[in-house]
Amino acid sequence: MNERILQIFLDRPGQFLSGEELSRELGCSRTAIWKHIRNLRDRGYEFEAVSRRGYRMVKTPDRLDVGRLLTCLKTRTLGRSIRLLQQVDSTQNLAHQLVIEGAEEGTLVLAEQQTAGRGRLGRSWHSPFGKGIWMSLILFPQIPLQFTSQLTLLVAVAVCRAIRQNTGVEAGIKWPNDLLVRGRKVCGILLESSGEDERLRHVVAGIGISVNLLPEDFPGELRGKATSLRIESGRELDRTNLIAIILQQLEELYDLYHRVGFAPIRLLWEAGSISLGKPIRIQTREGWVQGVAETIDDFGALALRTDDGQLRKFYSGDVELA
Ligand code: BTN
Image (cartoon, rainbow, N blue to C red; front, side, top):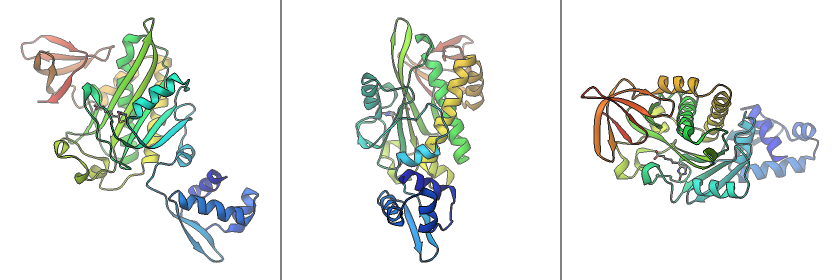
């Protein structure tokens, strides 16, 4: 019932709704309506109450809210089951645990804060309370193990498109899956998987987006290297809406991928890439290698034309624009 009242207010922004109208529409007493509104207030929604006109929702909370997320979602499978925590060590850990417990495809783990968020290559991920999207999505893709990196690129494309669509911020993809704005990182993606008999068994796609962080929210070592969507767009953003759009983009691309394969995803990745055609350097175990990023192959590897004219492929590593 709480979610139904919420949906009515969300559908009629700025409009007053009387207790009588609401009780008629929902088939319950005015006292029940009053209790539900009190409940929504406890969850951080703010209402203006004016006698003889009723209630008007004036502010939605800056907290993630499963009920509201479910009402915003347009997906069939992804995000249909959600676990939201105020604090967790890493959403990745909880997602892996849920897989063991039999979680279904599309289960989403979200947290307001991570105390041990992790990034690629053993790095940590800064995840302060209430400022970002720290999420892990459970998938069971029906593909051979060697194509796992295609999924990593797919996730990067989906998040990049969602950010552009929802915020207007022109994020670009740096191989393999960092999203950058004006050369600064705004989102990181971490895919962790398990396999059996050469096939993928499960994937936990971890997505970290610095949404509403202000410059002072970044620790010293990230200043100048990281940015947030708020800094880039000049406004505070609604994380719930953005999550809904990310899941929608992900589901569309994931379905497309299962139907026709990697080719269209690769084209979209190339269109969003800020590294292709550019002089870059890539850090490998043997040190830095310099050249021009030419293409990505079917395994998501980056083909680099090195300064001595060779075409070399890299399957992992850290890229810097030269
Ligand atoms: C990277 O760029 O190094 C990847 C960063 C991935 C961070 C996300 S936040 C949600 C999920 N939980 C984690 O512990 N990590 C990922």
